[in-house]
Image (cartoon, rainbow, N blue to C red; front, side):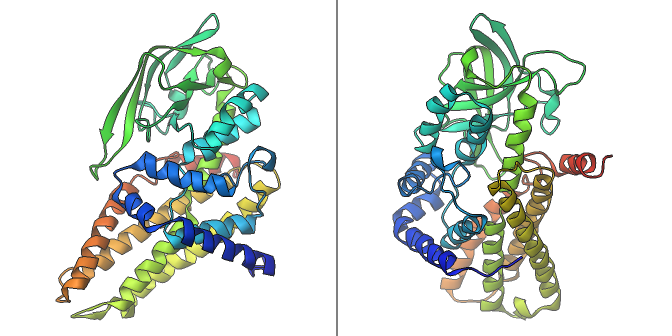
Amino acid sequence: MDNSFSAADLEFQQEVRDFFKTEYTGDLKARAEAGTDVKGVATQWQRKLFEKGWVAPGWPTELGGTGWSPVQKFIFDTERCEAGAPDVVPFGLKMVAPVIIHFGNDEQKARFLPRILSSEDWWCQGYSEPGSGSDLAALQTKAERDGDDYIVNGAKIWTTYAQYADWIFCLVRTGNFEKRQQGISFVLIDMKTPGITVNPIHSIDNHHSLNEVVFDNVRVPVENLIGAENQGWTYAKALLAHERTSIAEVANSKRNLAEIIELAKSQTNHRGRLIDDPYFQNRLSDIEIELMALEYMDLRVLASMSAGDTPGPEASLLKIKGTEIQQSLQELRMETIGAYSASLQVDAFQNDLHRAGSASRKEYMYGRAATIYGGSNEVQRNVIAKAVLGL
C-alpha cells in the first residue's frame, strides 16, 4: 500500500487543518470538555460540519455525503483528533442513517434523512435489553399489529443519550420462530409517544449518558417499519457492522499514544524519565505495532466501503483489536501519570498533572466497557469463527 499523500491530499489536509483551527473555537472546546451541555455542544459542532458539507462522509453524495476517498476520510479523522475535536454523535449520522439509506423506502428517506443531516433530530439505539445484551437475538420487546399501528411493550437498556433523543430505532419481536433471529423487525419510534419512560443509569464515573427505556403500550405507525416485517435481523447486522468499524477509533488511539509519549519524556521524577525505562519502552512499542497494523486494516475496510461494499467479519476484527488497544493505552496512561504522582515538581506541573489525571480516570473507567458495547469481544470472536473459519 502506498502510504504517501499526493499533492491533492496534502492540499485537502491543510484545508481540514485550517477548518478545525478556525471553527473548533476555545469556547466550544471548553464547553465540550466541561461536559455540562452535551446536546448543545454536539449540535452546534455538527451544524458547523453540516454547513461545510462535512458532517456525513459515509453517505452517498446525492443525499449529502462528501464523496471523499478513503485517504481523505483517514486525513479528516486524523486531523480531527489532532485538533481534539469530537466526532459526531453516531446514532443518527453513522448508524440509523445507513440503514434508512439502504433499506428504507423513498418516503422514509425524504422524511428522516434531511433532519438527521442537519442535526434537527437526535437519535438513540434500542437494541440491548435487560437479560439480553450481547445475546441480541434473545430480545423480548414485542410489537403486536393493531390495524395501522404496532403496540410495543418491553424495555431497552444501556441506551446512550436517550434523555436527549427525539427518536429511537428499535429491534422488536413481531413473530415467533424456531430460529430466534427470525421474527425480529426494525422500527423507528418517536420518543414523544405516550407510554415511553426514560430511566437514568449513572455509570461508574458518575456520568449520566446511559438509560433504560420502557415501552408501555406504545403505538407506532406501521409506516415506521424499515424494510420487511420479521427481517430486522438483516438490517441490524448491517448497522452493527458500521458501528463496530467506527468503534475501532484508530485516530483517537494515535493521539492518545502521542500524548503518553510526550508526558513520559517531558517530565522527570526521582527515578528519571519514564520514557527511558526499558520496560515502559517495551510496552509502548508493543501497542504502537498493534496500532499500526490496525490502521492499515482500517484503511482497507474504508477502501472496500468506498467501493460500495458493506463491512463483513473484518468489522469484528476492527472492533476487537481497536477496543483492546484503547484499553491498553488507557491503562498505560494511568500508570504514566501515577509514576509522577509523588513527584516534587513545581505547582504548575502538579496542576497540569491533576487535570490530566482527572480526564484520564474518566476515560479509563468509561473505557472498561469498550470491549462490551457494540457486541462484546467474545461474541465478535464467535462471529469471526463462523464467518471466516466456518466453525
